[in-house]
Image (cartoon, rainbow, N blue to C red; front, side, top):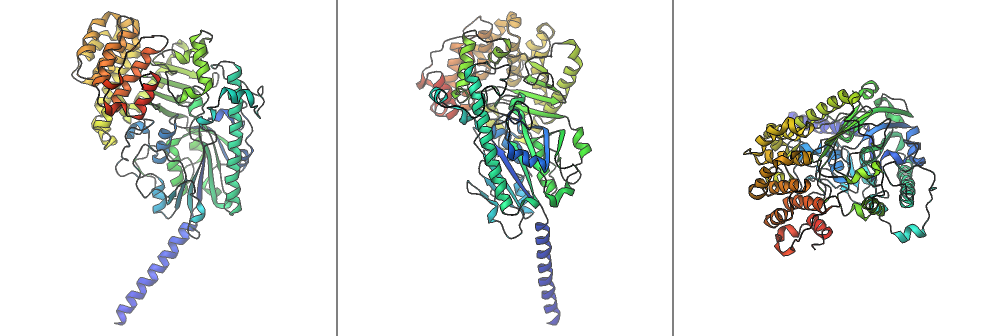
Length: 620
């Protein structure tokens, strides 16, 4: 009996001391706060850009922290950027690359949204309040996620991770009316900044710039309020504070596009006095090393002393093992753009050092293709109107013209990416190196977007990562077909003919897109394309073939595209068809369509994204 009592006393003592040790470990870990402002690139804060406005509260953070001059979102829109942040993974690898999601996707096997690892380690995790993930979220991510979530409800001495989202600078803030513009002045002096060179130098664009800078300063005040609350609670001594934009800004051509204004975000990290030894950098310093959203989750886990899951694509840039020397060697970031609401495109980019490489995989598209939400902004409407009237210069007009398949920019000399260096001989070696590096990344992921979204919904989204691994060789083959656009038509003509006759429908799909990229140069093969437009088993291939015939002006695409739309039962497939119809109705083609709403599948026409296209085309 005495031995049993001693045994139970030992268990009680072990439990007590384990609890004390766990409590001591938890209380010794730093708190971490993310303050995220929506829709603003670094270009509008004077801390990062001389053309910006003062943000005194963010600047105060910088005095006691680190200013990152090269921080990037990997995507230029909310849900894709936030899916990257919450996973530490490239979105096209895990199936989270489409905005707005038509179908939510599973998390990769054996990987959790990173706050779940913090909770397992004893952290109190809260989110106030935007999520907007394209992934299935389990119940273990947040202790609370709402517009009332706060660190204040944690246990005694419990470390916390808190996210605070500021929507003041969101795109919707620029949906003002002409009457508001005429009756309301801005706090920012209308002559205190330059309008970027690819924008019209108009009164409306100048007012929109000033009004947006007002919103940036209003946002900064909210940042100050969060910091003041942390200070009131005595938490600045042991709390890391990350301030960053959730992707680029919302002046026309920014949000939704892989330009620096869509990707290059402000980032300041406040370093608390108690944990300065975790950071191998002087307070108040500026860092030039590149960091991306894929790196944020690993960095938070590293600061908290938690092992970083191998399935994350990012690398920690602060905390144990992350030193200043290593950070300064980082000089590249990859980015991606796919569907934004109802508008499809497929664009990838690599920024390495001062050079930016952009690969347009569907070069027949153009940036200014109608997106209903974007065009609620008066500046977008004016930009399009001036283009249609022929009142734009070459830099301003390119937003409404088809792309070259690839572009190369020197960001130091050309920060707004107006001068494409891809065809200049002196930059040939840089172009080839950047092209090769991007292709290697696409193959390595692999990038799921080489399948159309509707095919991924049907076949991949139960387990996108496993699907990508199983079909990695197929994806590499589709990439090789797509890259035929980088040669001349005569060099690849025979290969294109072979790919168009392939039994693989997606090999044919990419061969058709390549044909459209060659435009009139591929006109000699129009009879082969007519056959595909009438008889291909895949509706979208018929549409792509009709699109080519419409682009080169030999045959109206209306009948083939309309019939394909009527035959589709899948909203994502129909939306892709409608993207081509919208392209064909744009000013440079101006084809007419007579589409009957009742002939469209009920399942298709009730989809929200499809409705936006139908509204624009005056079908609803």
